[in-house]
Image (cartoon, rainbow, N blue to C red; front, side, top):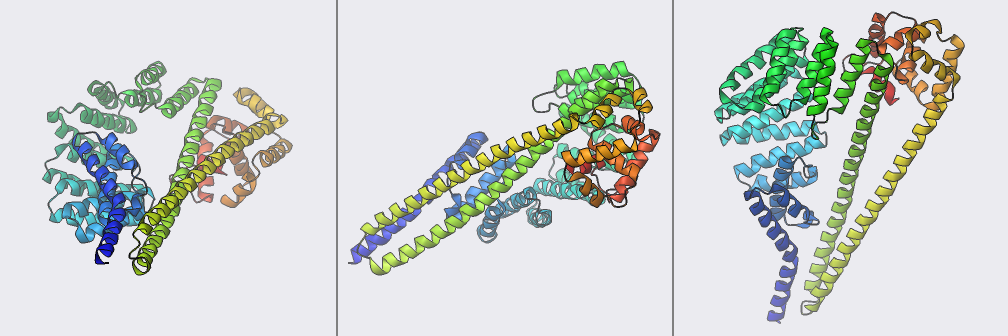
Length: 536
């Protein structure tokens, strides 16, 4: 009897640990691939571990730490917050200082991905204290930089600067001069955001002078690019040109953004031939990683508008807006997919919890009732396999349903866009507006009548059912002229066209836009009026 019980317990232990053993082998193999500088292969191997949440705490924590490190290196999504919280709970009790501080770093990054910035900040600060005690200055610098980015995102530039200074100091303590210089450069960037260009120039020059002896072409290219753009904002075009050309000389392969900056500079100076030349140079030097589609379209729009080529300018502007809308739509879809992944993970986690509870119930009942019937272990394993198979089938069903819904939503969006286009294009008032938009002189002679404005309102109600009501709710107390201004913005008109259609001076357009922003409580935000209007 004793031998039978012992055999039963050993069998339970063997089958219960079998899954953990397989996962541990894959984790070990992934570590070997990392040491061989094959992070992509290591990541794929870790991805092949199904349901890692069922691993024991030690194996799971080890898995998550390696997975998070590879995710950061490869630019992939971090493990979910509950996974990193479980990992952190394990390392708080059993981890080394290195494991604790790195786990807190990745926990903060996971919180950051899910936009929980308060908890991200707490995790980073907690990691800083451990790293400072361990004298891991490079990690301290990295953590301070992460904290600075959170303050930067929140427009708290003074705190962002303070933590960037701490970051740079830590990098110096860790003998990493390059990262120290990047910290100084980023402080200059903060002053550019605050439009304090003289102060920004001081930090950029400080970083540049310290970088010169290093002969790091990418670093020098970045710094001279920042200096050039900063001097352009200061209207010091001579110095701006000098530094932008230096940036190109340092890094010809990555020079497309700098060529685009030169095009903008020459447009401001009124040297339109040069501006066109450098837009073409930006197109020639752009890469698949940085296609600069939006920037090129916008600069082309500005250039053609300055040259008086309004038809071509409008075409570029419409293409730019279409591109911006496509990017926004893609980002929205990405956000939805991430939310769905989090939901699916929660569902899987619940199923795994149920499976774990079922496992222990079966185990206890087997010990109490069927101690001598070892064969029931095989039956239990069969039951567990079936449940896992059922879980996988459910997952496949969910994925199929989600894919079908995505296709359906995409189809509906295309139909709605077509209907809106048809409504607008079949309207007499819209046809008149499009005709007038081609010629400023015609537009001035054929201003819209009050009746046509009412027709335009009705047209917008048909094409965008929620726009007019949403406009009144978002911007309280709009005058009739301001209401017309918003409607024209919805149709994508530029400043010159707005001035003509509203019969106001071009210089009054920005003032009117500002007054409307105030009524919509947008004056202290980075959100543009166009973004709000297009979102209604």
